[in-house]
Each structure stands twice: as C-alpha cells, then as structure tokens.
Image 1 (cartoon, rainbow, N blue to C red):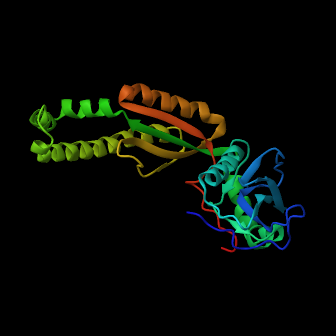
Image 2 (cartoon, helix red, strand yellow):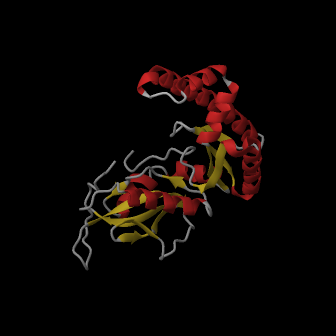
Image 3 (cartoon, rainbow, N blue to C red):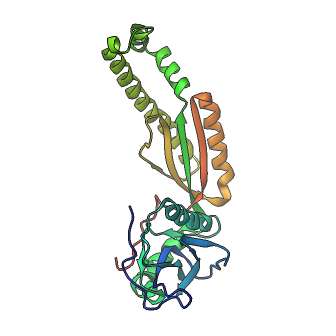
Length: 267
C-alpha cells in the first residue's frame, strides 16, 4: 500500500533543505477556513491548508518527497482530516496517495479542469455526510442460536462432545461449515432488515462486503447531519431487536467515501 511521493517540489524547505510535495486530501467549498493547529500526514506532520480556485478548494499539506507514504499513521491522518471536515462542510474525498509537485499543480491538474463538476457535487452534498452501521455477531450467542435452531447442528455437536479432536475431524469440519453457512444466511436476512429500516428515513444505502466471518451487518448510508438523531434511533431499535446476539454501532459523520468518486490529479 505504500506509495512514494514521486513528483518532487520545485522548491526546498528553507530550514531543512528537504524537498517537498503537496498532498491532497479532498475538495471543499472555497470559503472553508482551516485551523493552523490541525496537522496532516508526514513526519513531522504538515499543517492543513487550502488551495482555492473559483468556488472550490483543495485541502492540502506539504510532505517530504523522500519518505514513502502508506503507514498506518498516514492512513489514519488522511481519514481523520476528511471525517472532521465532513461534520462541518460538504467534502469530496480523494483516495489516499494523491500527490502533486506544488500548489500551482493542485490548480492546474485538479481544480481547474473539474471546477464545475466538483462545485455541483459539493452543492448536492450540502448538509450531508456518510454514516456506517456495523454489527458483529456475538460468538457464543450466535452459535447457541444456530445449535438451538438446527437438528443437524445438535447431532454434530453431540457427536464431537467429550471426544478427541482427531477422532471427530469430519464432524468438526461439517459443524464448522454448517455454522459458517448459517451465519451467512443470517447476515443476509439481518442486513435486509437494516437496509429497510434505513431506507424508511429516505437515505441512500450501500451494502459493504463483510470483513469478518461473524459480521452481521455492514452498511454505509448518506444522510443529513441534521437528522443524525433519527439514524441513532434506527440503530437503537435494531440493537434492541437483536439483543445480545449482535454488537452494533453507528459511526459518523464521515466523509462520503462510498458515494463520491473524485478524479485524482491528472485524471
């Protein structure tokens, strides 16, 4: 995942002599003001600034070109800057690793060519942000549920109980496969319930791929920040409905990663 800042800046840092480039986080309205205390990626981390062009601006910071990008801290900083912005203003996130030579290149290679497109997208996103609804089955609760519901699971459980692992290998494999398949079916059903509940609020929903074998639901939705309480109520209602079988959480506001595909510099 590491990506080198391959284009060197035309100028050198006066204090250290290190050559720098410009890292781009995302696009925001041109009237956005940045906080000098907010730092971006890099070591040392650069101060977040804006490069303005017409009605839009890019959130940027300087980075040294002799240091590869892609550390966990870099990825966290990239998301942190975008997500913090999304709670206050519309933001179009760029994928991690967008680097150009200098501030002029930000305008020439990104903002000027896509000004109207970006401005229209920001207008559509006004007052909205992404939220993530993610739930994971409690291992003990979901296995107990599956065994209670399935006579085949009960038979296999009884077949391996108090017996050596090597003597019950086939039964253990069969039980593991049954549990995995049943969890997948339950995930599909529970995801459907969550999608319907969210869509009743009139929000856009994207189903994300499961990242863990016990994921119960993993959804992104684009919703009004002003209506966050309604989203929280949906999450609370689902958590009550599912009880201890699912550990559920709502994350946001976040940048709209699943709903915006922003052109990278030069693209």
